[in-house]
Length: 194
Image (cartoon, rainbow, N blue to C red; front, side, top):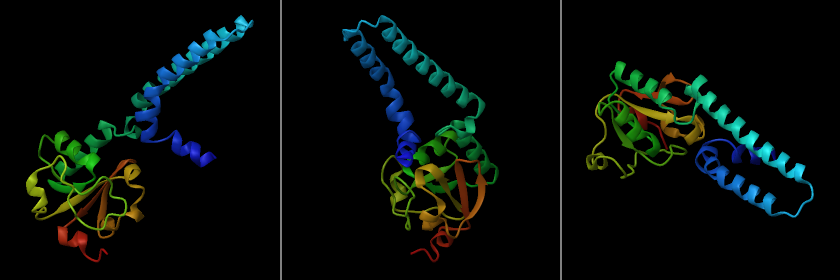
């Protein structure tokens, strides 16, 4: 039961699905409480006050969490900007990533970093089959020349051991959420990968 709750209330689902439904759920609870034929007026007021307090506390915690620890926030631009700065400082201009990260890196680098989208997730990925969504058409026909990198998002991709493409890479950047693995060439990346 504990792991079910962890999965349900952590990660992307919490921020993209459940948080947007909270106002509707609260409205339904308030309407239901108001329509009940209770003689206990105090209980109705206490329930409404508890719900309002819970919403205020959750909202305050969410805002403070982003302000005090932005590098741990989901898809925080702070964490992504750190990675982009590292790549540009070390002259890595062509790389690979999952669908959810490629366009973000290109945008944050003002087009200096060119990304090849190799799938929705890198979990179990053992080839460079290009996902032809929201990227240059030429990427389906050519791969990066020279040194390259994989931009890896640990949470989206379920762990290093599930991505064979990372086997030959050298991890050169890590900020708790994003990782960068570098290679001298695409051939080095694919060497020995099954």
